[in-house]
Structures are given as C-alpha cells and as structure tokens.
Figure 1 (cartoon, rainbow, N blue to C red):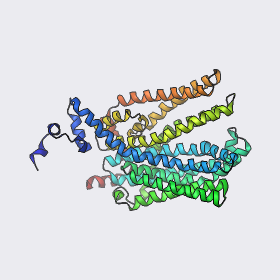
Figure 2 (tube, rainbow, N blue to C red; figure 1 turned 120 degrees about the vertical axis):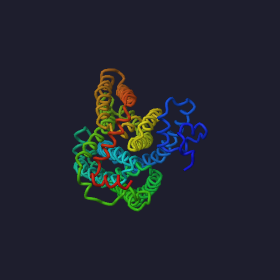
Figure 3 (cartoon, rainbow, N blue to C red; figure 1 turned 90 degrees about the vertical axis):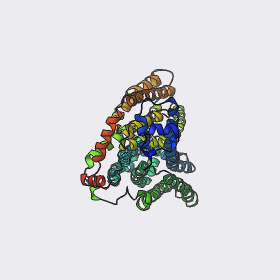
Length: 455
C-alpha cells in the first residue's frame, strides 16, 4: 500500500482537487475536519448536486410518462363525447386520484427502508421488504376495489349528476385491473430507485407510453370499443409496465444481490412495516386529497361553472409541476436514505441542505423516515390553516375561487417553513441510529446476521 493512502484525506485534497470523483465514505471523512475552507463548499455542492440530478433526471421521466398514461386516455376519451369525458375525468379525480394517493403514500415506506438498507449494504433484506410491500399494496387494492365497483353511488353522493356518475362508474370498473397493476408496479419502482437504478425505469416508461398511444388509437378509433375499451387499454398498459419491471428485477445482473427470490418470510413481521406504511399513506394522502377537495369546494361557489373551469386549469398546471417535482423529490429521498443507511450523518445533513435549495423538503422527510411527523404537519398546515382560510376567503369575501387558491398557498408556505425548521434542528447522528434499528426490523434476524457475516 502506498504512502499516499496513509495520508489524511484533507491534506490530500489540498494537493489533488478531484473532489467530484470521491465516494460518500471519503466525503464523510472530509466533512469531519472543521473548519472547512470556503473554497471547498462550492465543490461539495457540485458533488452533491451531480448525484442528485443524475438520479432525478430519469426519475422525472418516469413520473411524467406514468402520469401521461392516464392523460392520454382522457384525451382519447374526449373524442367519444363530452359526457364520456366528464365521466372519465370525475372518475380519474375522485376515484383513481384517491387510490393514487394511498398507493403512492404507502410506497414511500419502500423508499425509506429499502434506501436505508441499500446504503447499509443489507441487500438481502431488500427482497423481503419489496415482497412485504407488494402484499400490503394488494391488500389495499382489494379494499379499494369496492369503491371502484360502486363508484356510481359515491360520485352521486358528492354531487355529480346521474348521467356523469353512470359514465364514471363504467370507466372506474374498467380500471380496476389498473389498480392492481399500480399496487405491484409502485413498490417495484421504489425498490429499483432505492438502488439508483433509474435509467432502465425511464426506458420502460417511455416504451409503454408509446405502445399505449397506439393501443388507445386502435381500441377507440378502429375497433370502436368506447369508454370501457379506453379504461381497459389503460389497465393493459399498466400491466405491461408491471411485466417489464418484474422481468428486470428477476433477471438483471444489477439486482442479483438485492433480489433473493420469493420468500415466506415476507408474511412475517408485517405489523411494524404496516405502521410505517400507514403513516406514509396518511402523510401523502393529506396533501393529494387536499388538492382534490379544492376542486369540490369550488363547485359550491355562487358561479360553479366558471369557478370549476378556473381551478381545473390551475390544477392541471399544478399536476404537471407535481410530476416534475415528484421525480426530483424521489431522487432526494433516495440520496438521504442511502446516506443514513451507510452511517454517513454528515453527508446526509449536507445532502439535506443542498436538497433544500431545490425545495424538496417532503421527500427529505421520507428518506429520513419522518412520515408520521410530516402527516401532522400536513394536517395542520393544509386543513387547519389552509382549508379554513380558503373557505373564509372564498365564501365570505368577494374573492371567490381566488380566495380558495390563496388559502392553499398559505398552507403550503406554513408547511415549507415548518419542514425547514425541523430539518435545521435535526440530530443526524441520531437519525443514523434510527435507520439501523429500522433496517434490523425489516427482515428476519437470521437473514441480517447472515448478511453481516458475509460482509
């Protein structure tokens, strides 16, 4: 071993300034030396930003093109008639959006535990975590299936006309299969993203999207299967995504250490993971359902047609922005969880500060496993403050729908400030210790003991 390898890292960097090529272990060692010269901070920020954007670029593509599957379906449905479009749109917002929030929230638990397990090199535990997540997601899908099947009654209960509710029920029943596909694909995508496997996911998403366009045109225009055909085509495309994700996990060399095959151990120890899953689902659902509730509130204003049209346009822009931010924030969650799992509290803390500059605070919380805490923050900021202020401004002043929108902005502002304070006051060494405990609870002890022995 050369004498250079025995030298402390900081003096070596003073003479060899290739900080962008260093590993997280080296950066953790570097951050231990205080004070750090000002000239190094810009290089550290570039190092972290490079890792963040390498992950987020493909993650953004995945998020946008997965969203585009439903978007394209609605575009084709619009050519069937205004009533069909209205029914499909209401089902997408009121039914599919409800399930989307639950499933996506539950999947954030996979990001937390798998990301930290991968950082800690507990690769064998990740296979069990994935299977456990799929079991819980399918269980949730079974329960939600009743809402899909009887969606007509639900849509009528929230004030939709009989004709729109009937068309909405036809569409909702056609995408029940899509619900189960999403229940399987969502954990698998988080499993791959936790390993920094993002480019293959992007290729799959784009490929399925292109096939979906062709199939939708064929089913609706050529074969003339109508609204039900459009819904079933959406379900089929999502199952294609499940097939490609599953084949990649089983056969890709990049997953040979993290996918250990199917195991009955996935059915054991579900309760602790279930509690984290519930906290994750509540955290994200409070945010997703709040946005949906704004649309329903706008329909109660004195001029509901204009109000609904106005806020629907704003929500469409917001949804596109949310898909972009969802991809970026997924990368942020992976970065923080990987570093916590690898026992790098200083790198994790530094990653948080860089991520804060990109405004992805919620996914930092997911990567750290703060789902229950953020659920309370969302409840207070969105519903106690944002919704209350929005209702007062919307119904008691002349602002109307603008008042509801300003209430949402205030809620988001309070949430952001609160999360900034939480991250600034966090003891990251304690978060590393919590990550270790969380990983050890994610699989059977004998599996983890074997992994430790192997390493």
